[in-house]
Length: 357
Image 1: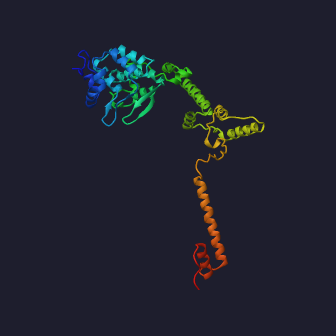
Image 2: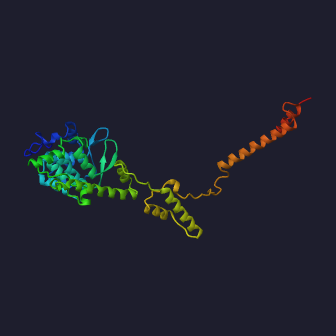
Image 3: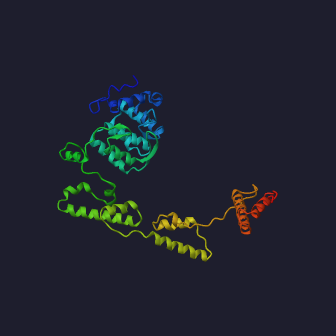
């Protein structure tokens, strides 16, 4: 009876809330040690506490036997006990524990109404904290805003099939017919930065086109300043929009910096690697390996731990070979190869008696 849904829980999308997770995954969660030891008889407060203390990563199933993560076990426990909407909203509004917020957002995406999902999850686009995500075979880092974007755009997240979510435009049109409580487009970070009240554009009439044109010009000016500062994404965005700008002459700046360093060395001053990197970063230049000042390192001579090194042995062997070659050439010069004098000389080197006449 520990795996039965709360009798007072209402159906979600016309079915038992626990059925939102596939049957095989549910059975693996029921058989897991974490479910039996830590999630037996938990309330909503216990789930929030365990998510804040014990939850260190998000993800679905991992390993060869598809073992469920703690994140997935807590999601199933919330589907089983079905906490109140106010409790879920408090989990999402929690700014101290990022995994508690991720848990509440995932549960709301599974069980919430479309308008409530957009209304509660879109503000989390401004949360850029890092999360540990456990893949089936490895780990990776992701940000909380990436998780929110996947929840609003993808069909499967953490190996769980999400209920279908209508497009935001459909809900905005329905709001005008008093069907939903979603008013206007989403306020993005661009709107906040440039003070653009895009929600009120529909009531501006003829001034709408001029207003949008000025807003685009302000955004492009900001992109241009970022591109001149060395931001690669801003430069690529301008290229996609058909803008042409002069590339940053990094080679010239580096040569000027090297000339300055050489002048300081002539004056007797010293300059370190940290000062070089700081000067390059102030100019928006990324240091390349070819721009580093390479110092010739002298060959280290260690003590006489061994009599001779491998290099010395090779060099000695080469000297012996060269001397033998020279001797053979001298012999060839004295007497022709194959004559009696030649073979007597060779036998004398080997300590043998000369050939008999």
